[in-house]
Image (cartoon, rainbow over all chains, first blue to last red; front, side):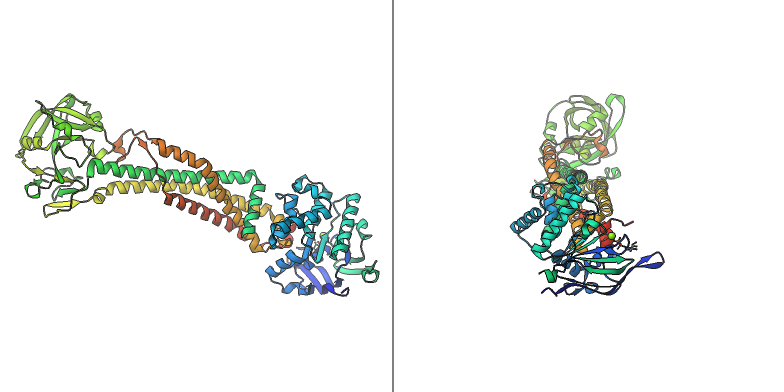
Amino acid sequence: MNTEKIITLENVVKRFKVGDGEFTALKDINLNFDKGEFAGLVGPSGSGKTTLLNIIGSLDSPTEGTATVMGKSISELSHKESALLRNHHIGFIFQVYNLLPVYTVYENVEFALLLQNHSAEERKKAVMDALDWVGIADMANKKPAKLSGGEGQRVAIARAMVKKPQILLADEPTANLDAENAHAILQTMKSLNKELDTTFLFSTHDEKVMKYMDRIIHLRDGSVEKDEIINSKSSSK
Amino acid sequence: MKQAFKLAYRNLMGAGLRTWLNVSVLSFSFVVIVFYNGLIDGWNKQARRDTIEWETGNGHLVHKDFDAFDPFTILDGHGNISQIEDKNLSPVLVRQASIYPDGRMMTVALKGINPLQNALKLPTSKLDTACSEVPILIGQNMARSSGLNKGDIVLLQWKDKNGTFDAANAVVADVFKTTVPTVDGGQIYISIKKLWDLTGLQNEASFLIANDQYVNTQTDQWIYKDQDELLITLDNIIATERISGSILYILLMLIALLAIFDTQVLSIFRRQKEIGTYMALGMTKLQVIKLFTVEGLMYSIFAMLVGCIWGIPVLNYFARNGIPYPVENMDDFGISISEIMYPIYGFKLIIGTVIAVVISATIVSYLPARKIARMDAVDAIKGKLQ
Ligand SMILES: Nc1ncnc2c1ncn2[C@@H]1O[C@H](COP(=O)(O)OP(=O)(O)O)[C@@H](O)[C@H]1O
Ligand SMILES: [Mg+2]
């Protein structure tokens, strides 16, 4: 079970059109992730972290090579299939939270479940559980504008986790948080990782984040510079 | 679809003031359209009823040479009615005549009519009085333009069948009030027997008015014109009013729809990040387009509800109490118009308006929403398009 590869990247290249020319943001990336990993993509700004997360999250597709997520090749998915994959199996956490401003905390978290076919009671239970995980159940009826940064990011985590996805992608989730909040949030994610066996993949250039990681992949100029296993899950289990 | 409605509802409620502005504009146009159409329908109904009661009856049997719209046909456009004796027909003989109120001359159409007729509402029984002067009946418009009042005496001059002028004093037996200008201005009513005596045109008539029991007895000499044929002018004027009315509410609708369109275009630009987030959370572009379209559709549904809340009492009030319609000169309208108009709101009219508003609001929301299909999810999430 531990050797099951949930994400496989083979010779992934991503080029963007820039003016008349092209810019290569990812150069021949080869990476595998096991189910339940807690890994970080680390590198300076512009090294391709976000681009890589977007491809794994099926929001974008590689120019060359294959990205296989849960047995499905990203570039071969139809628009509808990739939406379905995201809806059921992939949770996103963004640097700026991207909460839906007109919805309450509760409604933001409920959103992903509304797209699936759950009964109202099922939804309610799942949403309240998720809010409990991140410790903001008492803010269910607040609007995002009334929340602090730490609270906002917790809502984003609850929203990503409520559907119990296989994979959680977090793009610089602590960039806008103070140290205390950053630690609290990472602890929450770590416990969810253990509890639900969700594969976590972060992008960050935050030192604080790195020490929570079981594995750190260093990116530079679109290439993998170093892939270090710090705390092998397979051996610890 | 249910989830699209649920989400659209949340979005509109969340948008607050912007939503209610659009909804107000749309509900206003909705109510005005229903009101204006109701007003014209009410006018149409009143005008038809009054014109039938005062002028057309159940149709006219018209002498083949007589044309009500051509004064030159008055002289010879008449014939003997002995052959077509029918208790359901009431003869009218039209002659040209002059009156001299205050010494000035006025040319009038002198209409001989049976005082006992019951086909029209004209109070002709008032002509059935014996006095030394000739009793005549005039309408309020005629009274105003001639300066004559009830009981006034005026010199009446006419030509007999040989073309010889003759004159006598006439007394205004009554002034009637009607909403139908075509039986009033420039016309004087007199007992037909009296007119036969004055002109020597015994048993002659220009046309005969049919009552409800009449069945067509058209001959070579006498041509039957039914209600619909006689009401053609009225129908045309109502149709014209309807068209000028529709220009008004097409404009209103355009303004309301433009407000929605504008909101949509702006939304799609401003809500990119939200759109990107929807996609990241697993919505397809089609679902997002549907959501935005349903938001627009929901504006129109809210507008209906809001329109009902304030529109029903307002429209009801006008339907019950009518709308005072100050008519300076009834002749300007050419057809019957009453001083108080009662709008009639047909079920068909309301349903039709609802459907039109809902469909157009939906289309207007869909058009800009199509742009979402070309959006790139990654760019949208960052909110950095254009
Ligand atoms: N849509 C795009 N068009 C052109 N260049 C892009 C686009 N997205 C990213 N890039 C470029 O690709 C490189 C990697 O970007 P990104 O993955 O966002 O880096 P990181 O997240 O590590 O800061 C950057 O140099 C960036 O300018
Ligand atoms: Mg980035």
